[in-house]
Structure formats: structure tokens, C-alpha cells
Amino acid sequence: MDNLSAAHRRAAMQAVRSKDTGPEIIIRRLVHGLGYRYRLHVRALPGCPDLVFPIKRKLIFVHGCFWHGHACAAGANRPRSNQSYWTAKLDRNKARDARHKRELRALGWQALTIWECQLRNPERLRSRVHQFLEN
Image (tube, rainbow, N blue to C red; front, side, top):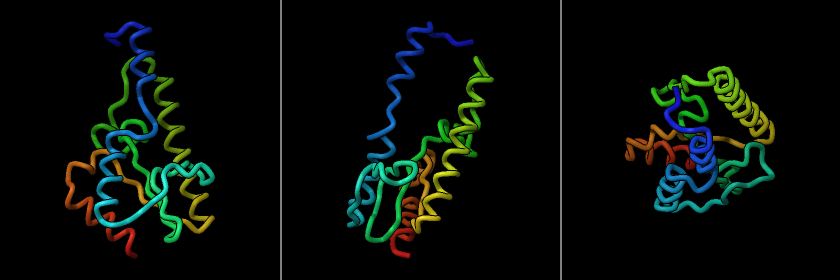
């Protein structure tokens, strides 16, 4: 059962940001430190990617494990209250992400998804991002 009142839960959920999140800022600093420049949240592209490298036709999504249904512990954790709502919502998020990736591939873009849990290993993440942007 939820230990917050409906008003407090609503306030907490409204505070969840979609742009300029902590994980996104970490990735932006890492990419900038590697010497790459990018555009933020290009709304003309499907899914409004977090970082876009127009000349390279590459982009990066920074996803929260819970909200986008990653296969890690945080992504597998589902709320116990109002399960029908949350299951449907999180499944829709995953389907939408897959659709956006297909649309981007059809437009000639390459996408990399970085999950929130992957921020725990900065060296591996740095290598993965650098390899993605160089190939």
C-alpha cells in the first residue's frame, strides 16, 4: 500500500522531470569531455532524443530504468498499488521507445540507449559512448 496521501503522491510524481535529469547531465558532461558537441532534445526527431549529433547522424537516449522498463532490478521493480495502471503505462513506454527506434533507423539515424544503472561504471560507459560516436 502507498504510504503517501493522494495529494503528496501527485506532487511527487509531478516533480519527476523529463529533461535535464541527473543521469542526462552526467552523460552530457561525459560526452562534452570527450570533445563531442551535440544538440539537445531535437523535437523534429521521433522520441525527442536527449543528445543529437547531426553531422554523424547519431543520437543518444538517456533512459531511467524504472520508467522505460530496463532488465535490471530497478526496471523490474513495479509498484504494488494500482498495478493494472502501472503495468499498462510501463508497457506502453517500452512499446513507444521501440517504435521510435524503428522510425529513427528508417530515417537513417543510429541510436544508443544509455540506462540509468549503467552510470555506475563510468569507464565502461565512457568507452561505450566513444566507440559509438567514432564508428
